[in-house]
Image (tube, rainbow, N blue to C red; front, top):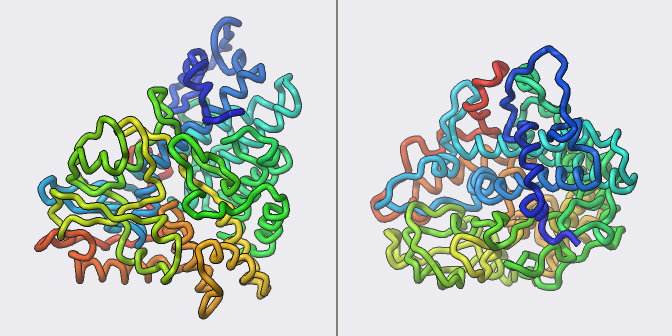
Length: 511
């Protein structure tokens, strides 16, 4: 059973690493090629000689998962969750600004003619295209490979899902991006024009519709790999973005009726431990991490802590034997807004948020809320193995409730209440559409959903404008030390999409 995605990358990938260099998998920067015929020696590693065996394709698909680990470790939590009213940064006046993160949290990302130099925007963009480059290479070669048809279909289905998922992130963050469906062989291939979001979404739909029948269900798939249920959920998510409610309903009901998933009885148990409870019965798809020296670990918990924080205070949270002090600014600190969003008696509140005391803090008495659902004891400082959730079964139920409600189907309440009952709550009060939207906020808090939900439902500008006014009116409530104020440019660039990365604009004149 595959316990950790891409383990083989680190244990048997010496030759694959050489191939990755050939394939240009660190982005779309490509060297120019000569016109004359090139003959590849049979003992040389290249596209014609490598992509032959089941092991070759297994290693290649494992490599396509790898960028997900870096994306969800830092870039996406900043761009999706801290770029909303769910989390904010913890100001440390003794350290000075960490501008790149502050700009995201303050909706003040410098952008000129649709281009930005923000490092986290660049990282998200490049890593998504790494996934696309790697899956394009697999899809360009696998049909001709003489390997077991079942293995071929499974690998192809995974590649189609991963390409679709990467493009879905790009479409939601940037709206228009280049649509690469073939391997990039030269600089001219890399400089494609921008495709509109509608064209990107149409390709994702095509990819996922092809992937679903190729992928096995969760019970028949190696743990950690994408499944037919994951592909159905992602495709339903795409249809929800386009308000194609009936199409989304069909897919979501198929996931429910597959009996492959269940809600964990206890909300806190829906999330991965450091070394256990991974890919549990509620997990539809999650990014795999492993503590240790192999390079498979995460460290996102540490960037979510307020600062400055002493080694002893870090150790009390993490349980590590070698805790270290942290300086700079903390990120993804739960806002008063998300804390107030939980109803009285909601069991998810205490499972999602805890309070810690930071003795050297410049803010108030140093008592901060932090994200509890990712706090798990581990051995090594800055090195943990909690998986990061992408889709959980509870989201399937909430998406289905929304799709049904938009069609006037009374069964929407049934699916909504499956989620609420676990949280210790009864029927919602008031408008059902609003109740479903609010339920997504607390059920999926700190899972990188909030910003996309605000944009998808047309609430982003109004919600963030009001949120910004609250911060500017009372910065102390949002973790500013006494006397400190938001920067003059805070909330000056509230837009639905990020600018494209400046580092890529020099390679593509279409930006």
